[in-house]
Image (cartoon, rainbow, N blue to C red; front, top):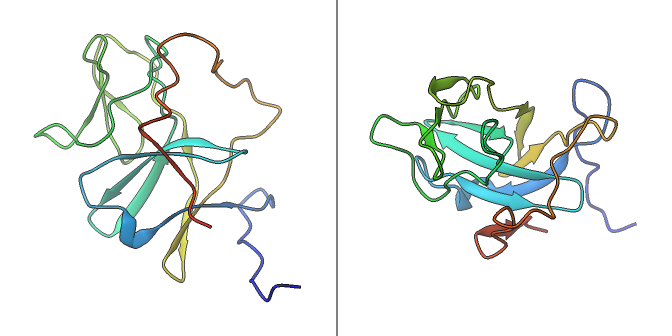
Length: 141
């Protein structure tokens, strides 16, 4: 036993995944993270952290990380669809389907995210243009 506390449980009872240290998430600067269980776009807005699918629901490309628009939205680099970082809502088309969101929790300065249900359909990672591994951050240990 290493003495580490067990991860918190999501509302559905599954263990959450440690995705980042809160101190590493700058407000207004979305961060792509990956773990074996999760690919997510983390957005710190004010004192909250939101986790969303990093894939545009219209073009299925990875959403722009690093900065929100001047209006505080996440922008798709392909066709300009814009989404709310708080709830994934479509704010500007051509997308019509909101981004899936994931439950988050902050515990002792660490951000935990509920991974998507493994039974749910997940996007393919084998399509060219969807693998910006240089922009993804490995989850903090």
